[in-house]
Length: 132
Ligand code: HEM
Image 1 (cartoon, rainbow, N blue to C red):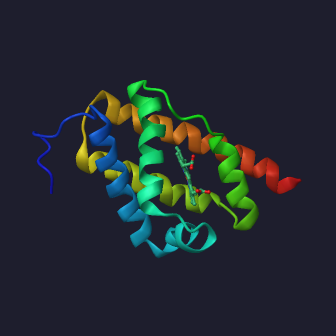
Image 2: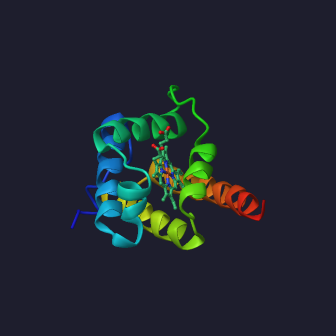
Image 3: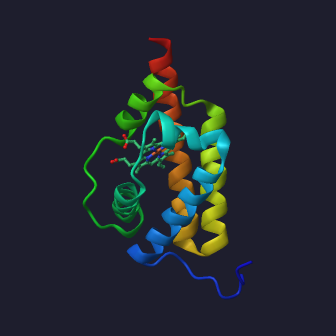
């Protein structure tokens, strides 16, 4: 277990790399969600993680570099396999746990809040898509 006293906030892209790496270890180890990443979309982890770092760096550290439409990417996944509220719950739980196990501070709180708000928007768009 990490020592809470020694834990630091997210400060740079190396920290974000550690975060997304640990996060994807949890996602891929969880059979209730891993099939989306291994069967529905076959992600190449070594290509995927740097994209995630760029995305979160833009969101949290204020760097630029992420230009794609993230909601559309997830709407496209949803046409192949339903991204249910249950899956979002699992995704968010693993994300929160990974943040809390590794970081403590303002940016650590900010990244969790941002993940929740993006997940909320995605779920609204997915619900709209599902009724079409
Ligand atoms: C049920 C929840 C989710 C599942 C199953 C899921 C699954 C996936 C999959 C399979 C990809 C790869 C898509 C591709 O390469 O074509 C992907 C990409 C990505 N996801 Fe998610 N996702 C979920 C929620 C989220 C949320 C809430 C966020 C952000 C807060 C997020 C951020 C990203 C980012 C940044 C990428 C990279 C997109 C790119 O290639 O530009 N995902 N996701």
